[in-house]
Amino acid sequence: STDLHPSTAARSVTRPATAESAIAVGAVNRVDLDLAAFSSRGPTVDGRVKPDLVGPNGVSTSAISGFSGTSAAAPHAAGVAALVIDSVNGSIDHERLRRSLRESATRLAGDGPNNRTGYGLVNATGAVRAVGGTVGTPVLTVTDLRAPHTTTIGETIGVNATITNTGDTVR
Image (tube, rainbow, N blue to C red; front, top):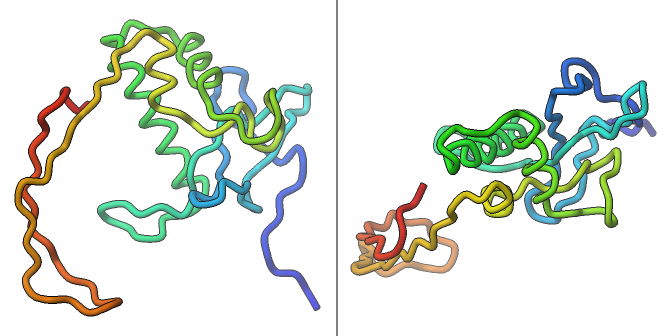
């Protein structure tokens, strides 16, 4: 029998992700945080650790359900990078940004970086705090929740909700 599941070998990270200034992002399953079989692995030809980070794979967006691959993982890391930049009003250089993302990542395999998950799972709160940015504590209160009718087990319904943020500004 032939195994048709994709599998990616060591040193499969390619350009432009191998550039020294690039922040390469791999993909992990959003539920169990296992490395996706198709996610590229390091090291680079000159021995540097890649990927730098991993992001969630198999997520849903407002436009796409079941959004998978590093095409889903990389926007998560880019979004976190944007939050970090915004938290310091844009006054951050590339190296400090990369360092904040790497050092704050949630380690997935051992104590240090490795060529499968890099420095770990991108961590928005940790990265913003690493540069001295402010992380608010939004308090969302549901004040009115109404279902259109009684539901049965397994039934999907639309729900109207009024939600008020009574805490910090959500960024």
